[in-house]
Image (cartoon, rainbow, N blue to C red):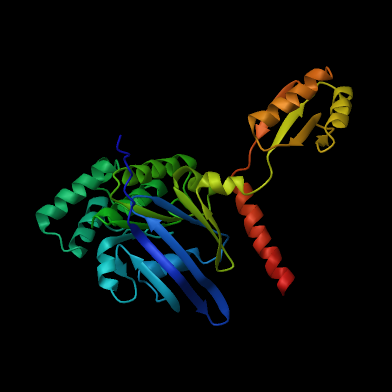
Length: 323
């Protein structure tokens, strides 16, 4: 029987030793990244970590001080024009023209991409329908909600049919419903396998929902990289929470689990756990064998919030210790 081997995806973005400083402030300190085609890559980090600077360099807006970067197979420093033809960029703030209608904004982008009139109108109509903006197409963008403006902004990015899209905090300021709508649009883009998304965000749930791989940037360095599941396994913080009917039951349980953290106000006990079935079963066995009855049991596993605070906190502490 012949074994089928999945083809290796080419790199949509590859970065080696990328660095950037402004005076004495090091913003990027020799970072390395390889992002396969047809995936979503999320770059996380606190304010000032260098996320937007990385996007600006990779999209040819500013030069790097050192290192190499290739986007869609082109050298960012030497082949900037070719890189710009292959990418789309949606920044933190909508780049739409409020004095124009939604359709006029798209037609303007079509002109900038040198599409002929018929192709530009076809592309605009297709994107207006795809982003559910057809009914508002003839209205000035100044009348659009924030969510509609962000959808139009992303639609404008797609006029040139880019292979790589940089989304720099694309859902900043959106309400939860509009944010989820943007997530669905991003998922649909990547589902074709033809588009690669480089996403920066401060919403950890957003990265968890969308990204195939995540990197954490802090102090100009990439301090962690992996799938969401891999990153979550790197930090402690899981626990089993037991809730009891009265203080006597809580007292007894506390003596059984000496690593537990009790809360007398809630009558709860939190027992450190890796979330495995074996650990949960062991806790239940102890309770059964001693006739201690818990009213409720809930399980908490580490999420990206735990990862983010653990990793960026550690980097900050190490920096402070060294100074």
